[in-house]
Length: 155
Image 1 (tube, rainbow, N blue to C red):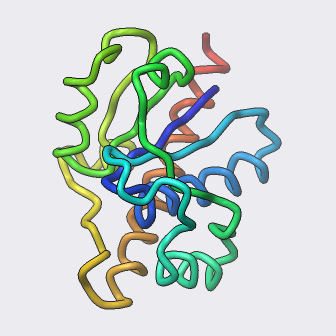
Image 2: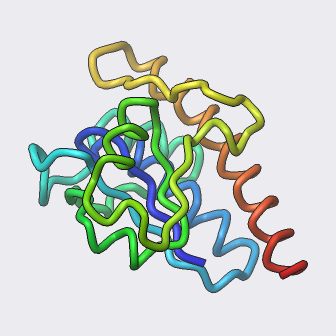
Image 3: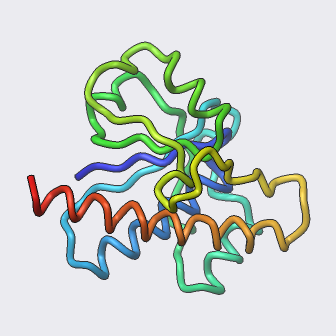
């Protein structure tokens, strides 16, 4: 299973989801690939936002090993699931060249059973925003893994 998490600049939400999913996948003993990307290239090569890194570290997630990259058309063939953090990312992904090839595109909070809900961008807010984002991402990643593991075992 190959998962790609996508947000705007790949420095807050998607690397947080990447780190949470990597930890959960490893703890479950799964041989899955996890990555993250942004819809734009503003931060390519940069490490995640310091506030996201600190919030993640406080819960045992390591974001420091990640660097931002931009989503590309080839990702639709490289990944089984491309998961958008909010509705604008979902629309962007659906319009990209290659969107119909391979990867299933979905909204992050749908995996937590919170259909149509966006993971808010904490970048311009307070430190509390990063904690709230982590709460949402943990619920979603848990739902995602439970669903995909069930699909794999029944498929």
